[in-house]
Image 1 (tube, one colour):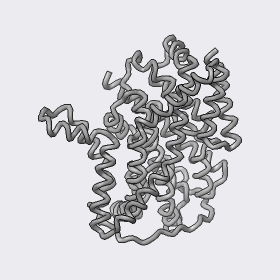
Image 2: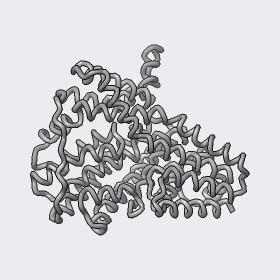
Image 3: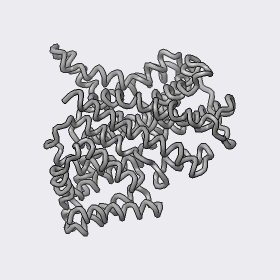
Image 4: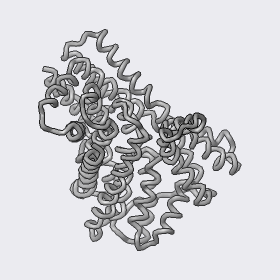
Length: 432
């Protein structure tokens, strides 16, 4: 019976999604409906909702808020523009796709998907007008890099939350995620987009960017990559015996601490040092924090839905079935996330729901929790189609038909998803 309750809950969630109900409201309503039909009384359901929201936000709130503030600061201080200019200059006009891929990967590391997309959109428009190349040929490397970083790499919301739910080391998740994400972005971006080199481009809206006093390239790359560098250094703490240095490295290994340090560095070196008033810096940071508000609500509601599913026995039932299957646990996590993704549309909701179902039995699986995070993350971007906001964002911004979007965006998302789980399984075979 618990699986029937799960099916009803997911179908109700799909119905609400199709009716354009806000994802946060849809998830809470689906959680309530699933709990009621699953036999939970009002007290149990309230406790489950509060526990799910509290546990989920408790482990990710600081990281997401700091990430929003940091991303906004990088934009307002000219770091993103400088990265773009330097990378385009380095690669030259003949390798513009590779320049776009590198720029998007660098921007996608510290910024959330939607913010990075909006920030890089003028670059694609400008290059389309300047080079005359088709929009899909230039845009696919951008969205491939942004999608794979969003799905696999902390401190992005989904992988950060999954790492907390599955008790995975975020730094190890980041390092393995980078190994998987780089080739996936290359194949899903420049390689796949080569098939669209002779496609048609419709007129695009011109976009204006505000001229800034830009930092030099060294400072720009340092500011953008600092969180990743700090978390990577933090992973070395196990090899250090000197207590003082070990504590510093342990501090750096935590995503929220790495982001806080990077935020302070950027604010002081590229903000106050460049004579930007403290009042402006605070406004920029607050603007970035505001941008993650809805993401936080969706993550919180996903945690509530997960806790209700656990409460009515769905997780235990699924774990029991999975124990008798010949499907590898990592493939099981991938397929579970992929099915929910195709059904619901939201990558974040798919990842959180799948992780919530798998977390109770994680200790029984002979796999690294970091790889399970990456497997679920890969499944959560599988086959984006008409029920996904990202699908419509790509279609509308680049003035494409539904068919053109399915043949490019959906194909790209499916490609990097399959490459992602292939990389996960390869690493598992090498380390086990």
